[in-house]
Length: 381
Image (cartoon, rainbow, N blue to C red; front, side, top):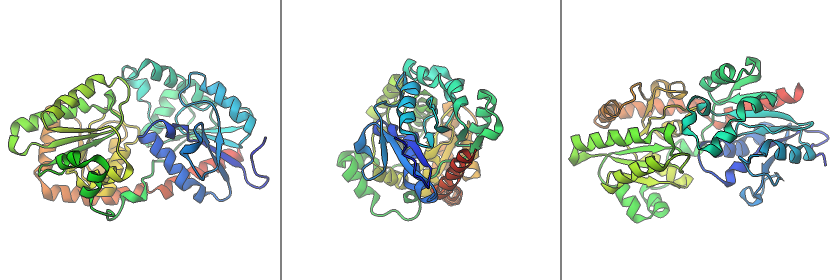
């Protein structure tokens, strides 16, 4: 059955990952759902799911193929070719093989090419498809200029087929926080965890999937140095994010720090709790060896939380002069930068102000409008 309207083309957006993961790509998909249809009233939209309950009240196309399945390109392609949307937006790198359906694919980063040792064998099989599969897309969305350059250079996609559209940040991260962060943390995380977080000491927050490229062990080492140098005012490291690939050693390192009362590990937090953490922490630290965008940095800046980030990947492009960038890759350098900002309330206030202004560039309304423009361009071609 052809689901396209006689008047308006149907755009299908792959939302299957929402049922399986939290993190950057699911947040990106959620933003598309909430904002793109409002920016493109000339188009119809449906969201591809294989678990219907995840998107109540939204037009969906239900398929059987789960995300990251080894036969996904073929199986999903056959299912969607039979449903005949005019365009499919593959939000997680890999467009399927389709008949009569135009394709847009979003590439978030290419760390899997540059650091394959970070991947599990299953992830390597899935992302190993990207160099060939991406050539089947009529257009590629890159979430930063850094990622766009890599797509062009490493995947040999013609420049005219790659558009930079930076991620958007939900409006809830901007402006005054609706309520008391401490009460929300107590309700969402339990009183014991909230009490540990809200104790009178600096809080270093880090947000992101726990996997090798995020370099949590580097941050743990920096916190250990700070704890030894200032035992009376040792900071608390709060680690938010689901476990990713090859995470056993990192989780053990974080757990050891938590056993000394210097860390709290939060694999799952609600959006309300995450917003409360951004408003409670002293600073956000992102030591990643690579980021295709770095959504937590922008969420933190929108919330008025100072950011320290590695001078790697897209982070310098996204953070710019609204945060502190660390070029060194050792715990001593990170501990020194962390100490500098922890001890400088005036510097933190200046970064918070610059961060809020910088975050205004990443409003979802702009992301949605530019994404809809790509859909129109591909449909017209």
